Image (cartoon, rainbow, N blue to C red; front, side, top):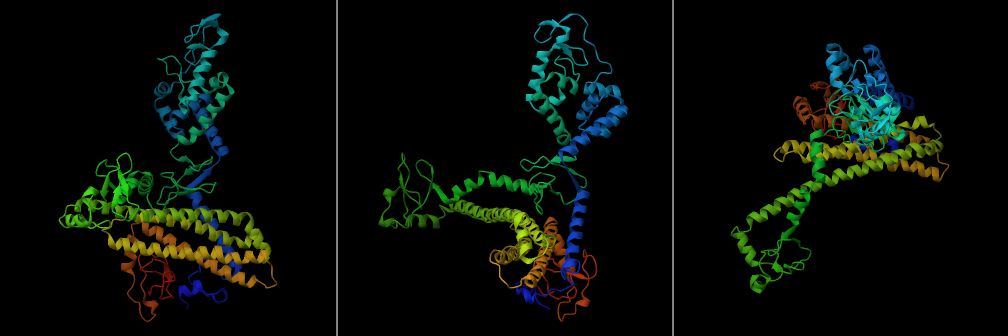
Amino acid sequence: MDSDEDMLDASDSELMYDEDLYSDEGCESEEVDDDYEIEDSQSELSKQDQRYNILEEEDIRQRQEEDISKISGILSISKDAACILLRHYKWNVTKVHDEWFANEESVRKAVGLLEEPVLIPSSTALTCGICFETLPSSNMRAAACGHHYCIDCWKGYIGGSIKDGPICLGLCCPEPSCNVSIDHRMIKEIASSEDHEKFVRFLYRSYVEDNRKIKWCPAPGCEHAVEFFLADSNNDVLCKCSHWFCWNCTEEAHRPVDCETVTKWLIKNSAESENMNWILANSKPCPKCKRPIEKNQGCMHMTCTPPCKFEFCWLCLGAWQSHGERTGGFYSCNSYEKAKKEGVYDESEKRREMAKNSLERYMHYYERWASNQSSRLKALSDLRAMETEKIAKLSETIREPETQLRFILDAWHQIVECRRVLRWTYAYGYYIPDKETARKQLFEYLQGEAEAGLERLHQCAEKELQEYFNNYENPTDIPIYEDFRQYRVKLCSLTSVTKNYFENLVRALENGLEDVSCSSSQTSTSKKGGKNKNRSTPAGVTGDDRWPCDRCTFANPFSSDRCQMCQHQG
């Protein structure tokens, strides 16, 4: 049987894959592969539907109206009153129902709903309680409490409250001692059309923002909301706008890193602490004015910037006037070396060295974290181009329907997702304590294997596929169908291997690499002679035809004594 490296790097005509390795995700024929892709896609959608639901504006408004109508019918109150009740109890229909029937009077008092409205006096002229103008009763309006004010004062009061934002949804009578709520009907009658539209928008958004089970998608410009049903270890949500985010913290999806670590990492990236570390590691204070100075030339003779202009030695920070050939000249300082041996500069040098090491360590992880994000965005752009135009060109070149080329899009989707996971593993690695040497070494090995596997998939999906697009630009008479069929097998297999490896990696990191250690300790010691039939099945492995690699945790078939992912001898 060929090794993993041979399988991945061999020419298309020499590719041979173990059927047992991909028995559930077969690529032996186009028909089997297509069936698998459809079933796998439906399975993923089914899992997503069980965990969350994407809501559009029409869905939200329909649910809001249904809840209002339900409360209105059950409690035998107007829809405006039902809306006030639901807003007060954060659109929780069950809580409104329970509280109302437990103590209706108390609920009415807390919310500001009167059983019977107080009518405005029928006199011909009334005095406004705000502007104190005496006007005909037809120019007066009042809430259910009967406190009457002129229309102009009402309009200014309501308009000012709406300008203050969503707080206007709890608007009450202007009378200081009155807490009677102002209903939607009155706002619609008095407020300007612009203010009324804002109020309706606030009311609509409150259905999501006050509901603990629904959140807005945080992507800029996206108006979708997400309803989450099942809380488990996977809180990643994919919105219809193609934005992945974490349900808990609404940051970009960040498995396998927890929300607390993400918060610390993002704060560190934006904090001034790293600037201070850089200053401490790469500069020294002027002995006279104390301003930090960076050494940018080889000579030890430093001159501070005006107006200070103090001349000093970079090494010992002493006045340059006291330096000469007896102190070592321009490129060394004997007095500094002597003082260093005596321990005079040990503390400051140690502090500077620690800052430099800390900064270098942070930059190592940050640069790779940012680099994978750039690669992910580029892959996402390539995926969009593939979906919109390139697939059609390829279909024309190889004379296959676009539905048969879906495996290419699946590969690109996998690349985008793996880039995201790989990006956050660097934040994970940064916070592994240095004293946990074994855990850190295992993490770095797993991360390195993941990066290598992803690069193989990315190269296959990007550079090797480009040859077929070049054939589209410069058509030849050479038949490419058979070559493309072999390429299809290779890309499907790489996609499957990479997907399995990253899924195992995410699970291992989320469990603090405990599962890896557990699997390693329970793996059979029967490794010589190829007698895999004697290998015992480790705990945590489903089925009896797989064994986990004790180095990378990849699930291998029992017919192989070498890991298909990392080539480690099993």
